[in-house]
Length: 251
Length: 258
Image (cartoon, rainbow over all chains, first blue to last red; front, top):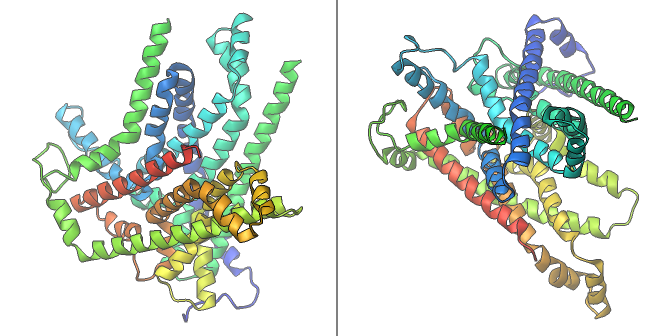
C-alpha cells in the first residue's frame, strides 16, 4: 500500500480544503435538506399508519399487518432501491401508465432526480419509523383516551392533548434515528439520485474511490458526524421544550 | 361517522402497503417477463433470466463469496455473542453497564463511517483487502446484535438453576453446557440467522474493504447504475427469498417459548 499518508504530521489542511471549497458546502446543504425532507415525509406517512394499526385495525390482524410492513426492512436495501428503477424509470410503470391514460406525451423524468432519492429513502425508513411509533402508541394507556372522551374531548382534541404529548418522546427518538440513517445513507443518492445534487456520504466515498485521499475522507467524516450531532441536539432541545409545556398544561 | 373513519383507515393501510410492497412485487414479477426492458405491457412468461443468472460466472462467484461470508460471520458472531452474554451474566462490576454500552456502540455509527474507519485500520495493519477483512468488519457490528438477542434469552433463565447444578457437583463448564446452552439454543439459532441475513445484504462496508473478492451486493452495485436489467430482477428475487425465509425462521424461534 504505497498511498497512505496517515502517518504524517499533524495538520488541519484537509479541514481547510473542505471549508474553503463551495462543493463541500453545497453537499452539506443538499444532505441536510434531503435528510430533513425524508424524515418529515416518513413521519407524515408513518404516524397516521401507526395510529391506524393501533386504533382501527382489529387486534388479531395487527401482527399480520405489522409483519407485512416490517418484512421489507430485512431484505437487501440495494435491491429495494433498484426495484424503484422499474417503477420510476422513463419506460417504467408510472410513465407507461400515465402515457397510456393520455395524461402525458413525454415521459416525466423521475429517476435520477432528488425526488427518486427521497422516495428510495422514505421506502427504506418507513418500516423502522412505523414500528417505533407503533410501540410508542401501544404503550399509551387506552384508559386515558376513554377519560378524555368522558370529559367531552372529541377525536381531534384527544389526539392533540393526549396521544401527541404522550408519544412525543418516542417520536423524537424515531426522528433522531431516521435522521442519522438518512443523512449517512449512500445507497439511495448513489443509485436513484442524479449527479447534480450530490450528498455528503457520496463525497466521502469519492474521496476514497477516485482521489484516494484518506485524510480528506476522514476529515469529511468528522464534519458529517458534527453536522449530525448538531441536528440531534436541536431535536432533543425541542423535546425538552415539549416536556416543559406538557408539565405546564397539566396543572 | 364510524364507518367513514374505518373506510379511510382501511384505504390508507392498503395504499401504504402498496407503496411498501409494490416495487418488490414488481421486481419479482418482471424477473419472469420475456421482455428484456422490464416495462409494460407484459410479453410472456420465461425463466431465461434465471438461467442467465446461474450461467454467469461473476454472479455465481460473488454469490458464493456472500454465502461463505454469511456463514463465517454468523458462526463467529454467535460464538462471541454467547460468550459475551454469558460473561455479562456472571460479571459483577460497576463497569458492567458502561461495558454493555461500549460493546453495542458500533451499532450507532453510520456504516459509511465504519467502513472508512475499518479500511484505514486494515491498511495500517498491512492486511490486504479480501473476504477475510470483510469478515472481520462484519463481526464488528453483528456480534453486538447477536449478544443482545442471546442476552435477552439468557436473562429469562433463573440463577437458581445454575446454583442447583453447582450444588449437585457440576463444574462451571458442565453447568454452562448442560443448563445454560440447551435453554439458549433458540436464541443462538435466531441470532445466527439474523446475522447471516445482515451480512448477506450489507453493501457499503463490504464495498470499502472487499478488494477483488466481490460480495453479491458489491457486484449488484457495480451493474445497477447502468439501468434496468432483467438478470438483476432474478438476482433480486433470489436475494429477497433468502432474506425473508431466514428472517421468518429467526422471528419464529425468538417467539417460541422454552
